[in-house]
Length: 425
Image (cartoon, rainbow, N blue to C red; front, side, top):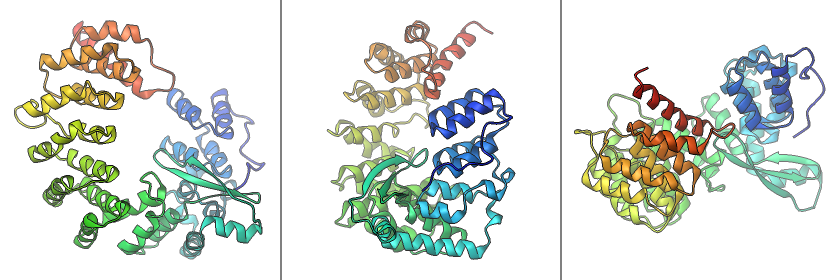
């Protein structure tokens, strides 16, 4: 990986807003880039900023710019990084940016095949081994975990003057997909398991590609992992099954019943917390009384990760528009949970529900003095949605949203909308 080159990505002849955006990209400040794009959305220089992000090996910022209107087709080929260098860097976000739909045609199939072979070589050799071969260095490589994009993190190795990320497995998966190559279930799983982290790009690319196949062979292979002795294998299988149902937008919803049956039985057997959490998240995605019954015992589980997973499964989307008695008791208990994230999630669930039983308003009002600011904000938000006047004074005491926090802005905006309704405006 390299440093920003000289050339056409400077700040000459750009306005103040554009200059700030270019400066934020050059400094690698993703949060500032996000804030500038949100608060000053009329930049005329997103495309130049995108070119700078790519040439500076900042794939996460390039992706952010793409999500906010950057058009790679406006960048000349020599303004961007060669695809080979992006593959060598090991950054899936960077490769994805260069293979954006608007410029994918710049790379012929023969080049994509060569890049697939290059990614496979790095993946099979291992990042550290390949770096040693290239540099001849026998020093210990340093490893740093970095944010790769909005959802994933990745390891970056530094050795002998080289910096390379360990995302070649994810890059290989993406290139195979573009080339129409159907990799086996086992092949994709083997790329994911060495990382054993759901937030690694190699894991996410494998589970998502398998889930999008939505065929019986993939379902059977994933379900068979339920009894595997290794928790990482079980976690992989559970995620593939969960995403298969989640991504199925067909009218038939053919995987709803099989998924519910599998996860109800699995939840009663699983002993590993990470796998159990995935299974419970899957159950919580079903609006079904059977799922609710399976989730209820875990509202008092000693691990907060498990309790967080079950909150969303208590819904009032059925008929009548009210929580069941068991769900109501569970949510009230979870709103007083020792873990702030559990309290916030439970409060948010109640806030957005149709069940406006006064007991919920009182429980949310009790959270207005919570030591955690986001819990207090979720309580304010819920009271506003439940048309409870107490939200107004509570919002005033909280003060304005913290700069750059869309979540806080959304919570406080609900108070403004309540006042608008109240005053008949």
